[in-house]
Length: 342
Figure 1 (cartoon, rainbow, N blue to C red):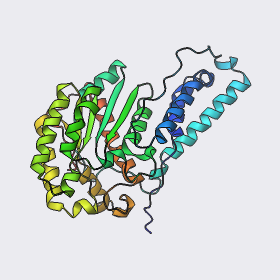
Figure 2: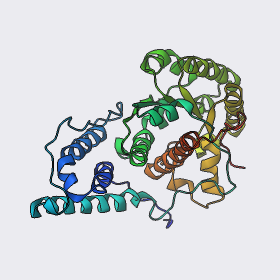
Figure 3: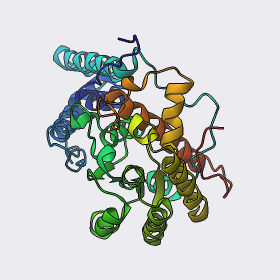
């Protein structure tokens, strides 16, 4: 077996422990006053991990009131002990969080890439300190088929990454993936499962099942364009995710190529971002020399834990970068919306 075999990801406690790091930065004793918030968040993460492929719940909120804790030299030995244990948990969580990439690192495409594009609605909410709702919409690879536990599907991995980067933000990621769905099926649930929720960002993974079923890519893209227009009409940012690079999809190379091309055109037409999953995964195999069995499960189609984790990591990096440009006052040209390897 290749030496590239990925490791499994950390437990849900990693997210909670990393949140505690921000608390510890203000002083050891403060950690005691905030301990309940960290514990509640950990319980919420654990609940998500055991809930199958259901929606990703919001993290538990911190208590609205807490007794004032002594600061500095006023902290008792017991309080310092609590802080020390919390610090140790944070260090262990940080170590475990990168465990899945310890043998095979998650790297962006070697050829470089264009920016994902502006996400003004998400950025505006984060700048204003308002709650952010993200909906991951799609089929089985959004639902998480192939992951060993729901904790390792891409929406949950993405949620954990964004919460680590924005520790004071209220970020919710809801999983609306349904195995087997193609674009017409998704359109039937678009209104109730996505638009009615009034999300700030919709990440729409689409196209793979149409390719596997030899459906007309142009017909699929017509549904997608209509759906994107409806999502944008309620003020949501949108990012499209095209098909995965895998043996089953590659066997339909002509249809896959057309689907990737047409989804890119929709992104340009609607002035939205597209995450080129097909090209990113092909880069893993062809340029980074990672065997497909190291990121695809034996069915030849779905990703494994490492594949979902790296996909989520790169997508999350792009979201963070795009939001950062707006927060820094950097204007993103209107024609720079598609993220593709050069």
